[in-house]
Length: 178
Image 1 (cartoon, rainbow, N blue to C red):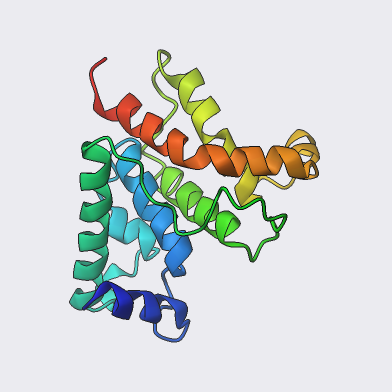
Image 2 (image 1 turned 90 degrees about the horizontal axis):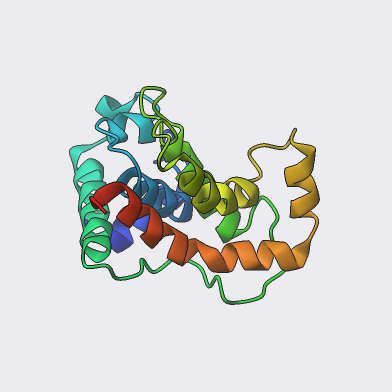
């Protein structure tokens, strides 16, 4: 299955009842690489239904994930599936930046046994580097402070513009010994 075929399939809800759309999938795959190891990432991605999904889809997702890993391993920035520099003022729930962040957060918190914040030496850095994803995802709607930040369009643009570099920094934080 080619990447284009996978992306087309991910957009079709009847063909992809357990997974995310392509933009959220990119966020999910990225987080499953940059953070703490997520050994059962396919199970998390398919919400425990990975056995109900064709091997072709799982192979294509794994190849996409491997490609993102190679880019990060070479300390190159991951190209986001939207233009974060475009000062679009659409941060609604249907926007690509929100979808990407939702996918990222889904992987980040997808396995309760994997805690990105369990190391006192890196906890603060992880919190700072993942804050844009948390805010942009809108997943913590009951937090009034985060909602106030979401109302500030300039802040939202800055957060969106920080995603690419934060992804690289998270990868280095979790995958180097420095």
